[in-house]
Length: 188
Image 1: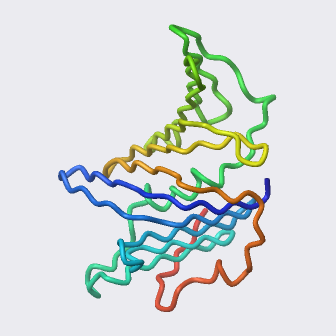
Image 2 (image 1 turned 120 degrees about the vertical axis):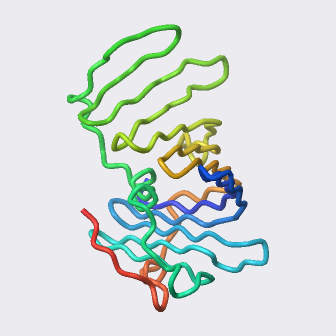
């Protein structure tokens, strides 16, 4: 798989108890191009994040000038949830197995694999501050892809439900251009 387009709905619970619901589009071109746009029901963009290599841009078009601040590092690292670097299986070791769970460590990443009756649930601890849980896998054009992704981070929880995947679509370079007025950030 070299590219992916996904349509999704997301529920966001912040630690202060705030709940927001948005829809979104996710574009991925391996190894390092990513775009996530979050929209209100009428298609009004509320958050747009573009990553192209070591450069990133974000836009909060409905925010006031003083509220257009850099999202937390956890939010920016969300691109890594979808642009996961390849894991070298030679670096992986089973740390422990218990109650139908297996902990597998690959470098700095911990995978918890849960054997369930109808599917396998993969949980991934990322950067010690973000935990990702992939579930409801289904075959899409020969690839097992999750239709539910839960992201727990320091500022709250995001539940993403994928409604549609397009595997290996042709994605024009222009789709990874930052929106007008976006804030530039340099990534690792």
